Image (cartoon, rainbow, N blue to C red; front, side, top):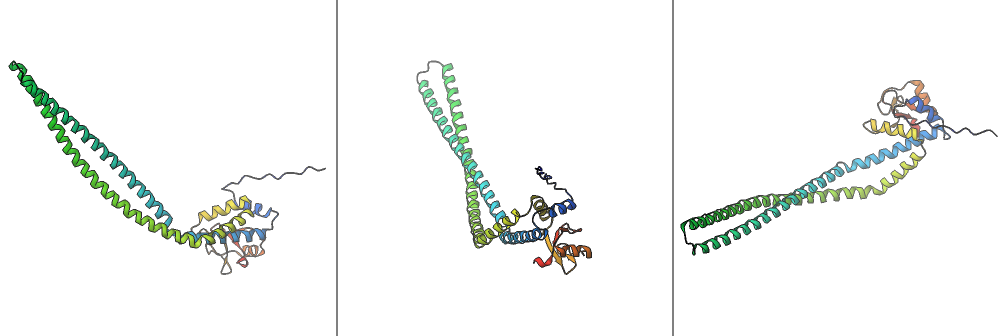
Length: 269
């Protein structure tokens, strides 16, 4: 019994020539005409999906930008709250320092009542002056910190206003986007199912080429029909008579020599 020779699949090369693609396209159990019709159906589904996506316009990116902005504003707000909390803790600490200074002053003043010589008297007075100076410094620091807190609170209030405004903008954009998505959800689901069905009937090499062409042209049309009887429907350059015959035969994969798009028989439309 003769051993069955297993066909070796050549790895897909993104830079492969259309000659090798055409050979692979013809070498299939499915007829070339059926594959061309499937490619056209795939392009129709993709174009319809593109129109739905275009209907959404810039809304998805606007929603994402607003969400990022609000997230940044909230992060800055959290930082300010943390700074204000730290300032408040510093005020509590400074107030405790003032209490300690006042207690020390009271203690030294009591000691003055029982002083027996001038040297000790001068030394205690010096300590009282030092404690008084420390208390004044602490009070000054508290005043400066309160000014800082006031500035941070003003900034925090401004951030809260901006978050509120941006939140309303985000809500409106999301509602608008949800309305569009809801109105087109069923159609898009059907189109994506149709696209998936077409993609499953096309070999990987042809799909790779199709996606590559789609991504390289501005209108995402990888498959076009003959325009006005003798021109490429993508770039509108004239097609040679022999190529027009090949296109009409539905037996070859024809690539536009000018724009690289796949050209199919207009009868498929």
